Image (cartoon, rainbow, N blue to C red; front, side, top):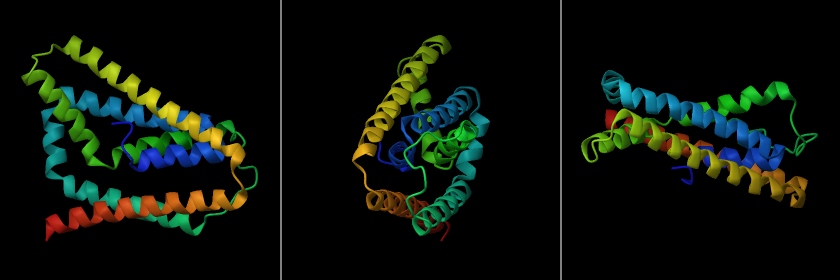
Length: 193
């Protein structure tokens, strides 16, 4: 799941190149925090799963709008910023955690993936809650490690980057967010029609 080329992946790469791998760790922490909430809800609440199924289109629509706005903003304001590549002020770390959390939560597929995994472990393997907990901790650890490695190796590219290339990274990231948002909007609107 952590190696899928979605918005989280591109956010990790972009922010790690621009601000160092520590930002990637914060983004990955936001993703993991969201996944923990999704796992707990998947294990404990069938009512929440029903709610998400009932409002999947609305959640996708809202997520699509957020991604389109973020993508447009990133693309249109793409410029190499003063001090790029340096560690950010410690006050901004929650922005990166929130970014990872938001990018993970606006895609309803993430919750349904965890719900499917939980259902499969229960039905096919009859796993107890304790065994599921070990399984999910291992999954989250693997996801965090993968995202850390993506961020770390992306940050190594930083020294080779010229200002023009950094501007292109911002534009490409913005375009990717924009098109993922359009895809979410298209899917949710086509279901409503």
